Image (cartoon, rainbow, N blue to C red):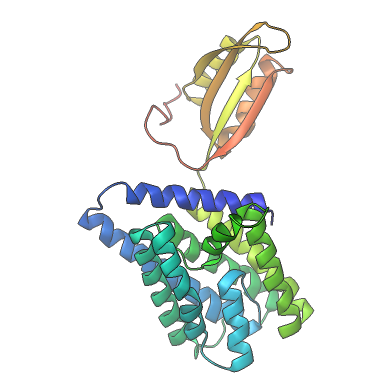
Length: 305
């Protein structure tokens, strides 16, 4: 897992938290947030105690440290999850804000209680691969819900942000090094095959978190530079039902006037858009990038007749 991927996830989380912090929450929104953070924390507890922990597979971050300490000492996992994350509640309060800190504290309390209540429940499967994959998916959905609604269940990101001011590494790189160290320690605490399964669970969880936060209908921004800009723009509007914006540009090397097309599509439309561009101009410049959120404007797709 790359540091860039982790950094993108943190940026998405910060954007979500900023959205909540800069407006007053209605009672309905507060209830929705409490409900979904509760659900997210409960799902993470299920992923840990029903799938991963009984099979000696860990997750990254503070959760991974808590699992190993629980295994070594025999003490309850929920206790370590609560104690080790509490310092980050106070750090988050100072660095990010009251709403985020309270949401995080509530999520951690639910997670700690959930793992304690579920500990006596037998694992759903003894198949290590099934436990790794399904545990990663359930855990990822839970963490993704909590992040999406302005909280956190692990203090690793906050720790990385603090270290970023003192170390010559990005936030994403610090998180990557930290988690690789933790997952590597699983090889000494459990076994090296369990450490490798833990890497699989960590990757599955990350991808599931990403999908949970952005949704399956993830948006993408598209920039196209072509001498046939009008033809391509008309084809995008008629065949995809997406609006386009023309921007006047100038080539820095040639000095020629250029027409730039900008539009927003979803991931399912990307292949069709590339086909449209290639049909009109196979030498056109095309750049596609992921977008965390789209609001306002006329993004809603028009009917194609």
